[in-house]
Length: 200
Image (cartoon, rainbow, N blue to C red):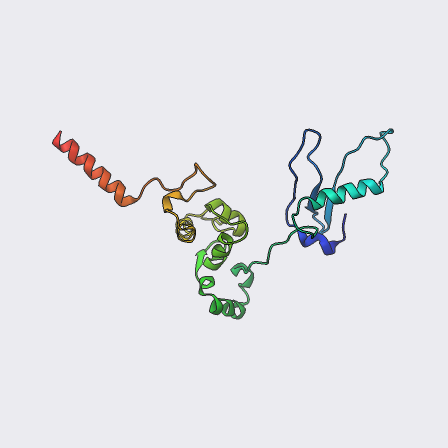
């Protein structure tokens, strides 16, 4: 376990791909703000042998380092500007909006999420490309209306930013497309069917 000064390096559990023998060495924050790495697994002669060895420590440290592709211990994301953090600092938020007007447009009223935050989530190194990905990253759609107000707006933003048809936007990946067809096309199709029925 590491001191609390390292506890903010991760905000969720990092796990390697499990094997038949174990789930592997992980990295996790604790509820008390520390950083925990481990465990490893090795055979011992005595079942009560709980000794810590230098080789064991090195194995745990090496296993934890594999969860990050850089030389740092763990990778951290750049801090994101969130409207919800500025509710009592309107002057400071106004300065942010003056630099980027997208932060002045609130898309999710329940969770207080701005368009600027959604755009940042879409254009991160690991981009959010679905409604659920946006929800997980910045909570848009997690409020009391469960996305009833903001989902159409988020869908439109995703479509514009990813430069794809609104029909291709998904809830959580391929096979969960939100829209089936455009309303005008559906009305046209119904009109054709009605004409055909009248003629018959």
